[in-house]
Amino acid sequence: MTPSLHLTATPDPAEEAAARGALRDANAAAGFPHDSRPLLVMLRGEAGQVVGGLVGRTGWSWLYVENLAVPPALRGGGWGARLLAAAEAEARARGCIGARLDTYTFQARGFYEKQGYRVVGEIPDCPPGQTRFTMIKRLDAGGETR
Image 1 (cartoon, rainbow, N blue to C red):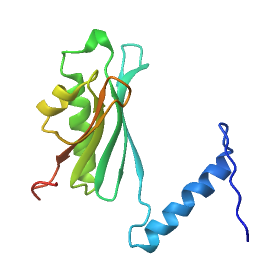
Image 2: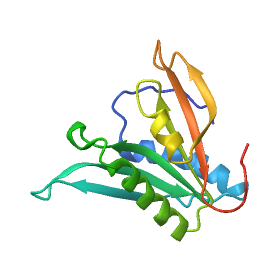
Image 3: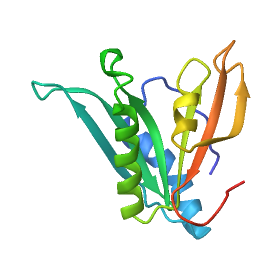
Image 4: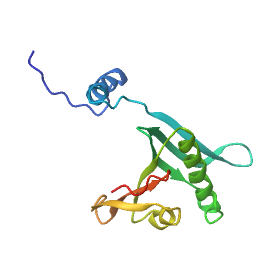
């Protein structure tokens, strides 16, 4: 077999799943099977509409926070802390030992530090002129992760 490269900006879902499956198969062969589960904590307005929330996943005994958003009118009222605490509680119930997220200089690093997260990595100029921070928090009594 002679492979060839094909690039697309509009991937077919089945082709994307096949490409992702190759890494999942390799991870499983190394003893780390795919065990990712979605986690969503919604913040609803008075009419029941979703106005913000936390989107994440749990897998390999970790919570991966992908997005956390609180509308400007509700900021400062503790909603972000409540969303994060609810996700962390569910992650612990799922057996997670830690949580991981990324934030940027123009976002909420200080907020996450107040919630017990610490920076373990930085990428300067991502996006240009800003820094991307990778942050973690242990959810168990297992100690520091370096």
